[in-house]
Image 1 (spheres, protein in one colour):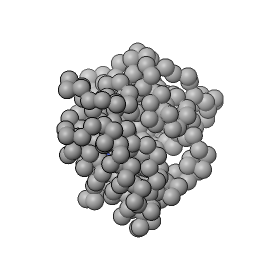
Image 2: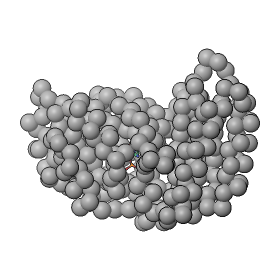
Image 3: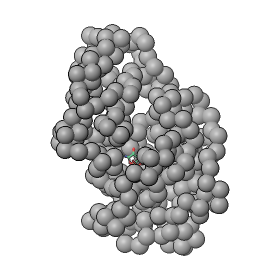
Image 4: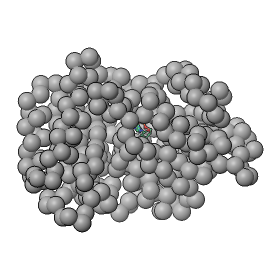
Length: 281
Ligand code: AMP
């Protein structure tokens, strides 16, 4: 399996696929797990060639420490991708190259989605995400690009980005892949101790409880329920829990029968920040 470090060599390798063949792209930050592999498998089914980009994007981190501690192991990632059958190219560019010499974010307006939840708690995060996804889409020019619902808000942001940048690419959303314990798979899980890993199962358990009770509980009661569950846990700190409208991602205060809702959560286990979400109706 070949790792391409620059757009020139990647473009050359993609040439045979440009006419009459389909190219899929999966942008990742590496430390790959089965959640990423599910996206790759879906892309392999839909396309003739799949590019997996592995790039820890500095402009989307609001905390330097989080960027420094982000797990990186290209060799392990290559070996994991090599277990899959199909044509996979790995694109692992240097930041300075990918960013054409200027490592900074564009200022995007994504129709206010960027100001909700993750955008509220991680300033500048979605400008960084939008900038890097735009750069990757322009380098690879795929027919379709795959993103996980694990980062549901990011998926909506990318859909907006494609409209804003007028890119001819189909954005495919893929379901959340979970550990047997229910914990959403994440590269950040590698930084959790055994005790924190066990404690973190409360995140999905609580989301499932809210999902189950949603029909009969008001949104304020759902919020109170979640707060209570996390107050009782010594290993986890709730950053936010929100029930939001699926389309606008605005916080919902009251339920309307003709609207779709999703619950979103961010939790700290020590220094490690974990997010998850679930459809409610
Ligand atoms: P990351 O490497 O964390 O930036 O993730 C790369 C892509 O994989 C993003 O589109 C994520 O939403 C997706 N992804 C990460 N974890 C999961 C998961 N557990 N289930 C589904 N997709 C995931």
